[in-house]
Amino acid sequence: MIDVNLIDEQGEALEQVIDSKSIVELLASDWAERLDSVCLRFVDPYGDAVFNRAQIPILLAELKESESEQSDQKIKAHLRDVIDLVERAQGQVHVYIEFSGD
Image (cartoon, rainbow, N blue to C red; front, side):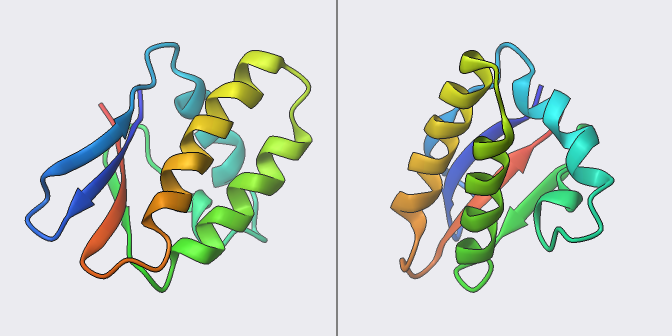
């Protein structure tokens, strides 16, 4: 399970998308193999990956591309929730996106 959190500079979660069906964990193995990925290939099922204000636009573009490649509606819906969270972080100072693995 890899939850996605919108965190402040102290690491406190302000908002989150819970990965109760392990959708992000499933996708992480595909993302890890993508050499064209700048951000998503570093999402780790067993650790944390934190993205800052400069990385968030790239992360967002990669998530949108991943969403467009999916045919399963449950996966698309979960990615849409993650994308919405990342969009709320875009352009904000001292706010980060954290992918928190088990």
